[in-house]
Length: 339
Ligand code: TXA
Ligand code: MG
Image 1 (tube, rainbow, N blue to C red):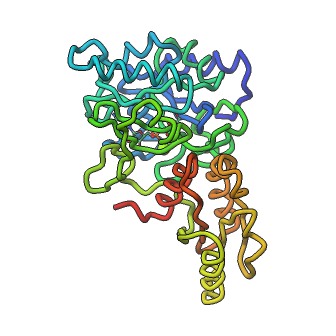
Image 2: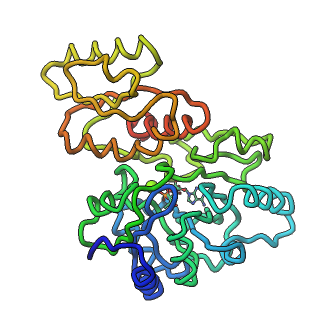
């Protein structure tokens, strides 16, 4: 099945597939999603099978309007007045957009979606194709990123096709704008916890929730089950080199010089790229434009697969703003944070 252009006819066709219990790939502003009807447990199971996703890793539910929030999240319970107030303020400020909220689950949502949890992760994407699709399907769409489990998330329709070949209809919405997955914020925890960093940054959330904390990504006791697995992995081993400035340049060049038997790739900033010799250089972007580095990260990781390198050395970046999300992905890609 093909990559199809975004037009009314194709969005309608793909919505019909969802209604009929099928799985499709569609663009969002963050990364492409692999979607099915949230309320159809059998359809949701197909997502796990296609991705090769561990069954203890829950999916994000995508909604098209605020009424849909009440269909998937339990907002009426008395104990959650405070939680409801927090959710309302956040969604007024950040929806539609790249913020996922973890909230108490409505009983109608099958446990297949939440991997047995009593909470749901919900977001309202801002991509017009995603909202149109959800609207036409008439149901909230449960969707993880549209990559095989462990692979870099797809930021173009071609990436989805690289992982799934002919298995799916893929709506081609071009290159995604943000390029990293949404921020996941658990409002059922006290204090609220950022389980995954994203384009809605810690600094932005602190403005609204002064007590919010960053999750540790603790592999032993994962709050967001997905965070314990190795992620975003290109085929070659990735080594994240700490620090900035002359030290990181020297460390990377030393590694290249002392491993002349290996085909080495360097994921470099535009500023430092010219300083290396004897390796394949892929430029992530300028240190002054971390938003563009974030946008390009997953496609650059996939480029190394085509270069066929044995090892990738990645520079570190500032962890301010979107840099935190970028560095979280690089750490995960290096496997330094997994079991
Ligand atoms: O930007 C995104 O979030 C993209 C697009 C397609 O919307 N989706 C995405 O989904 O990145 P996925 O499945 O790759 O990541 C979902 C993350 C996982 O880390 C999962 O563990 C976490 O959300 N999650 C889902 N439900 C949860 C819950 N009830 N409690 C805690 N974490 C949850
Ligand atoms: Mg994913």
